[in-house]
Amino acid sequence: MRDQDEHFVQPTEHVPSTAPDVGEPGTPLCVRCSKRMPFGPHVVDGEGHGYCSVMCAPPVPRPTDGLLEEYRVAEAKKRNAEVRAAADKITDQMMGDGENPKHAMGVSKVPILSVVPTTAITYIALAMRYGAFEAIKKDGSLGYGPYNWRETKIYASVYVDAAMRHIMAVWDGEWLDADSGVPHLGHAMACLALWADAKEMGTLVDDRPMPGNAAEMFRLWKKTP
Image (cartoon, rainbow, N blue to C red; front, side):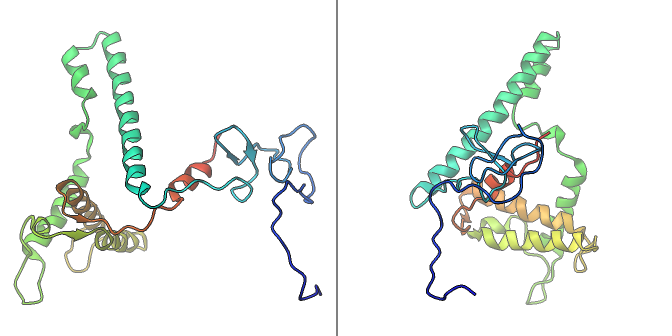
């Protein structure tokens, strides 16, 4: 048993791993722990250094304080630029293939509403009709009215919670909501639609927590061929 007064300090310098090597000599080594990676690095940082796991990789920078909104705006602009670049590439390909210029310009515009599945629109419409005209309120009357969510500010967390409840219900085996008879997926998409509408209309109370590293972790853990 270790002495109770013994202290252990996280090393700041590189410490070679005591784990046995796996794989043939010449396979890449983790920059942090020197463990062999026979199937290649699990995480690669911006400088091209390979790591065997997220635990060994350096922490991902997180935006703080007044930089949060600036970070979100920058990320949105980056995504929009990627979408626009993809659309421009499609346009260039069509123009090069002799397509009608009007058609090429049309498909390059964002958004392209014709690619939205009509099934999704129908599901959302069913859920919205129920909420507007058929849902039983506390006073016994029916429906909250169309576009009622624009009359007052709404909280993002309320609609995230509702969407997640419907998604979990359908994932756990119940396709139709017991109260409305509408597919749970319709209610889930309606919740997200109202969230998006409130965001664009300026009626959203953005009570999300401080940004975490979830999106970055998904990218880091993404399997590469």
